[in-house]
Length: 132
Image (cartoon, rainbow, N blue to C red; front, side):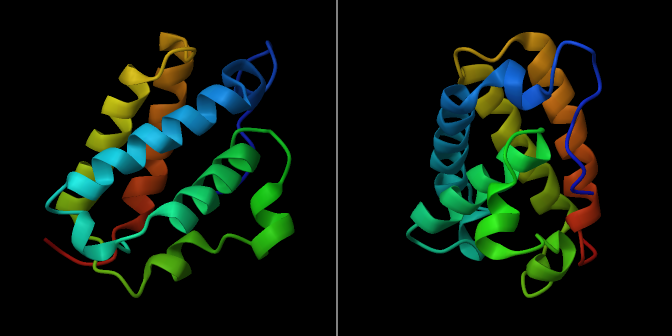
């Protein structure tokens, strides 16, 4: 689940999106998460460190430097999310926040946004650990 994204021949998705647009995406995403009634209860009130970890993870996941691995070790995504009730509804809410953030972030081409959303859809489905 954490292999870098390199699905097309014009460079990694990280190279195509770039670090600035990726950081802007994460900022927009967590602004939405903080307001989402399904998601806010399972996130800390201060999302600063959560956003930093997400940016580090996405950087490596999309083919950039392995920042998350260097700072925190292996992501162990499913294990790290087990303490939280990640229901199918929360998975959908997470994806809705990401989809909106992708649409709102300048500098992310529509094709790259679709590719990233498809990859994150698989990750979100994998994180569900509690029935509806």
